[in-house]
Image 1 (cartoon, helix red, strand yellow):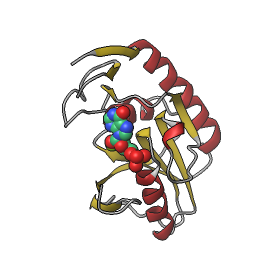
Image 2 (tube, helix red, strand yellow; image 1 turned 90 degrees about the horizontal axis):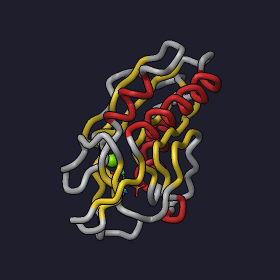
Image 3 (cartoon, rainbow, N blue to C red; image 1 turned 135 degrees about the vertical axis):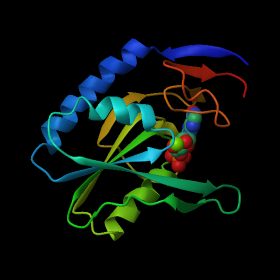
Image 4 (tube, helix red, strand yellow; image 1 turned 180 degrees about the horizontal axis):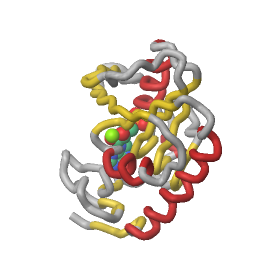
Length: 171
Ligand code: IMP
Ligand code: MG
C-alpha cells in the first residue's frame, strides 16, 4: 500500500478552528443540536465542538448504505439520535461529502423529524463526485477524487486513528 500525505495534523487543526469560528458566527443564537455521523466524524466532531463558543447539545447518528442494488443506493439508520429534534436547528457533522447520497438522506431524515433548519458541516468535500444535489454550509477542504484515510476516515475500518490525512494509492 502506498500513502501520500494530503493534510497534516497542523493543517487540519488550523482549519478546524476556522470552521468553528464560522459555525459560531452563524449559529450562536440558535438552539442547536449537533449530530455527528458515526464512525468517521468522531475525531473531527471532538475537535470542532471544543472550539465552539456557544452552548449546544450533541448526539450521533449511524447509517449503513447498500451499494449495487440500485443506482441511487439504499440507506438504513443503524443508530438514531436520542434527543428531541423537533423545532431545533440541526448541524450535521460528517468526515467527507462524496456522492452526497448519505448526507442528503440524513438531511431529509432530520427534516422529517421536524427540524427547523438543517445545516451540513463536512471536513472534506469531493465536489466532482456528487450524484445527489447537496451543498455543505461549512466545508474544510475541497479535494480531488482520491481515496483518503486518517482522522476518522477508514479503509475497511482501519487507519481511522491516524492523526494526518493520507491519500491511499492501493487499498
Ligand atoms: P457519500 O454518500 O458518497 O457522500 O458517502 C460519504 C461516505 O463515504 C463518507 O461518510 C465515508 O464514510 C465514505 N467515503 C467517501 N469517500 C471516502 C474516502 O476517500 N475515504 C474514506 N471514506 C470515504
Ligand atoms: Mg463515514
